[in-house]
Length: 564
Ligand SMILES: *Cc1c(COP(=O)(O)O)cnc(C)c1O
Picture 1 (cartoon, rainbow, N blue to C red):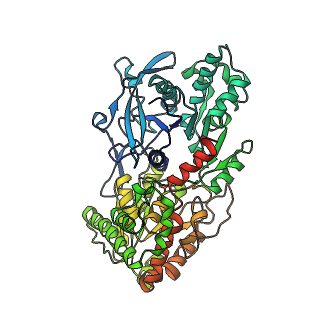
Picture 2 (cartoon, rainbow, N blue to C red):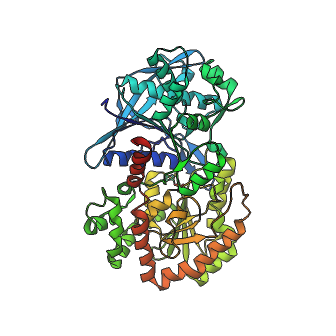
Picture 3 (cartoon, rainbow, N blue to C red):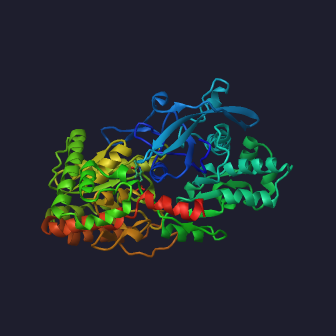
């Protein structure tokens, strides 16, 4: 157990629908990374917070207004309590921590332990006991205390559990950056020095890896220095320019960058954008993926098992999907689609028809994802459905509890159901989670993605769709710049090459492009050239399923960041 050499830190991890400690793509990526590490026998251990009250459960009332319900879960039934204890100091108080373990078991039996830190102990004050309750809840102060627990408490807990020889600490986004302070402290203690030298900084830097996940400013945590001082006390490193850089604020991204020997963005374009945003740093890119065996629905799993034995371990062999007979692809897709349509009809009573061309859109609700772009010109959309061929649309997605604008967006989309009901059936399914995500990304005919470039760092739901033979219609941003071959793996909305910092000026242009592709190309292909449509499905698997998976991604981390 103490032979693990990579420690992966993430504020959220989406291991199972019944462990609601995630809000979206960041957590899904973390879990898929761990699953692939287990399959590939990478010696990894992961650290996160318990989030005993979960993220939240989404209920939509009759008007489509989102109500946020607590998503408590029974920790004791799903995780195993560990004997190790650690402590952190917050505002001079000692906060005791325990942890719980969940083991991810790879296809060959290799296990990666995930440790969930828990501050809910009788020794702690009532408020401190709540610090591991809510994911992205509370104010800045609460959040900073959580990040102390994750970063500093996480390293201490690993030591307490016997993980003494960790060679790499991978920060999955800046929430875990404070771990570098603990590593610096360990370093000077070991060297028997009273204060930090450049050698200590170099030694820590060799151990650390940082992945940045978004160009959106809100995704980069910053805390005022007086808050940091009051929580963590006065520290020598605050005055070290090559560790703490910015006047009056602690920027978690810079802190992680400054102490990492390898920094990456999560797609090629996101790497470019990050190099523009953070010009002082060397930033590489490793494009995200998804864990293939997790995201392939049963009918496609059976299809691949028959045609491409070994695909779950050797994801690259999915390229041979090109020789799977079209009839079989269509049959498997029909099965997955029926399951989705049944669920929609059970939950919404809409009477959707499995023969109708079905678009899917499921996302964490964030403004830049433009979930309403499809409805920019409702008349035009109706016209496409009545002339090119009938359409129906399936939506899902949660807005952050404090995001009033996001909730309004959900409500607008929800209410279109009524105004379009004679033309286009629209379902808004409640409580988007891992399980619903799998059902939607495997059951629609086309995956729609409409972010405002260049703000989608990668995006992964289109990769899940591709693994299930579902092509994307997407703005050229994030992974789609790499995965898109027009008319071969799917279709683009608009042109490539929009710059950083652009307002959403191309909105109506993007909407027209979206409508044109649907009307002129995709809907006719689906209804009148089914053979060619299935050929696009096959290429989605062969080009994109074979590549945009976490097996390939983890191998790149091994080559470039972990054991280089
Ligand atoms: C895959 C997934 C996401 C991330 O999807 P993006 O396309 O990257 O936004 C978010 N939430 C759930 C439940 C998912 O399954």
